[in-house]
Length: 563
Image 1 (cartoon, one colour):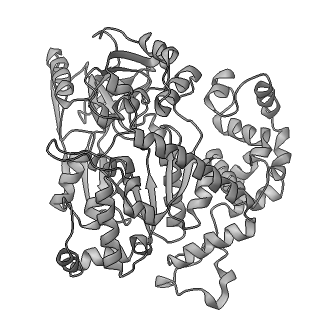
Image 2 (spheres, helix red, strand yellow; image 1 turned 90 degrees about the horizontal axis):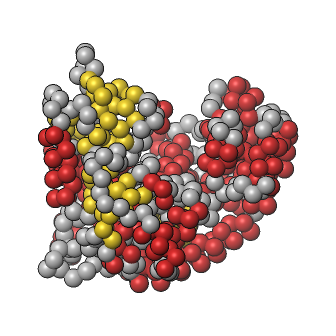
Image 3 (tube, helix red, strand yellow; image 1 turned 60 degrees about the vertical axis):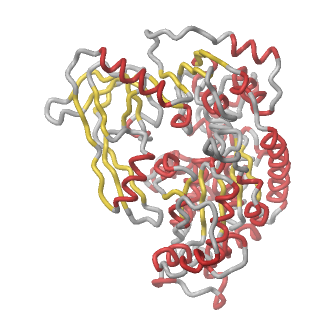
């Protein structure tokens, strides 16, 4: 399923399980949905299964949001006691959309508790008290954690709460991280439990002894190995030491959650020559979570580090902020440099990153998913340097394997159902859900007197794509639309995606763009064998002469049947 189709389904208000392989665009799709909801005056609850994942998305852990803490069960007396917690009751009743990220690491028992709390505090027997729940993640990645003296927890999809919620599955099929066909084939085989000798030979060919001169990060299953390597390498540097201590503001318990979840350490010690990794996404500044480099100097005035990337580009790094603002209002924040030492890191903390190269040691892998997560962090097989590799690293949980086949079938059925929907009916579903959530859309007036009252008399806003839609129908080019609206091409292309998903336009409405310089040449490259599924091969094929936005447009115009 394409991201635009998943977004169209999310907007209907159905419960959704948004899944797909690493790099398929799950986070990007959720971010677009959150932006859409906020533009309509609807504030979603953004949560995650772990502190690290919650920090990535600026939300609470689901345990904190639901008020369940570390409880393994809730008695009737405890649930009744929660009804007296005004802040908790108000938060849960003010929510219409609950997003839970990294669902693979949330146990089925915990999901059942969240369901119980939502039903009790919202006084509704509907699943999750009538909220739209959006589960995000990939069950082939890291599973729920349990202590040694506890039985293995069940996956979230095995819980009663999941079954009652009956989420529509949106299985994203695009791939934006790995564009190496051989490596993709190996990862797919690992995911499907069909690894054969040929796949294993590709991995074994990447096995090398650890070379200290390799300028890449090492991934280990255990923290002890990571700390030992990072501290040893830092101690070897004879340059001056600079220390940066994290500052916190807000409620102490939430500050502690942020500190535990932040990939930048509470105390960061750097020296010239230190290998570091960025821990945040800042596309405009040239780095993302996982970008690596080396400290080359420190600014004379601020004493902040200057990091040289593998490309040779230098970035003057300044402090950044991580905050918890699940309702659009910061409850707590921490400030630190968006860096960590990067000679080594754990597989667990690498989840969600994209690395150009990494040395992966899976000799001590102890859990399902560790091997798959570690290997899928790397963009290409050539960037993988493999150390130890035990049998557990290549194993897939049989429960996940069986469930995944069902998820894929369900997603295909949901996609077929979406394609059969009349555009007007789909738009009406979107508008009805936003209205029920207390928000507004440009076409909200269609409901006439039956429209529910809107809090604070919010002003009706037209959709962000409306002006783009009008200009497309006026046969304006992308450049002309950008100039008229003072918007970037990427923003206009997002509008085009939304308009196609909503069936407000069809590809033939874009036919006047076929004459743009470069479109024909890109199409000829596709006809000659260049795969249109990915953007990067086309970008590299033309040595960067054509930008990603033009390639994105060319791909839409090349395959109208896909729309």
